Image (cartoon, rainbow, N blue to C red; front, side):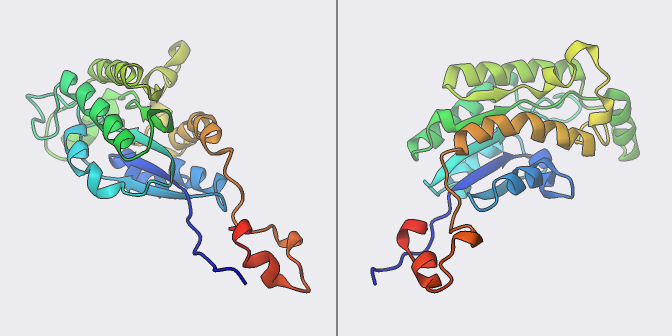
Length: 239
């Protein structure tokens, strides 16, 4: 029998802030993507609540070190766009935000994850009345404005265009045709169940075209040779 190798599972890495970290909760967009890609690759949650693109750029080399990566989502901006006078700890100037995103794509390319495998995701729109209520409950004033979020969303689109990465513009899509986007958000900033479904539905086509080539790992049960299952299950060709 030929030497057997452990199975090297490809990865889809979800890199972002709290909206990514929370995406593996019940009905989360990350969970939905992981379900769709079961038996084809591992969907890895690398979300860091409260982080901005400045900190993301610093930690990137520590958390993505597998060159068997089919796709990476980069989902920052909801904290970067905090108002500097109200939330200086998380705020990142818009031009630096653009450069940080471009640097992230550049670093990924340097470890053999080319720009065409990267999907930048803009922050979703902010529902100010709900988020202000959340802020006041925690003892501080409203620290974000939807108009500013929109500027950072456009900056994300710009970064994608300049770096060769595709962009999912949630800020624009969730407000298309003047629709009420408040139901997409649980607290004015983070996603509700409906918002998670929205992200999954719009992200999936972008990920599907990047993972369509991946075979199912190990044979379908009906294709296993019952007389000699080792022949089916231990063949290197079957992964």
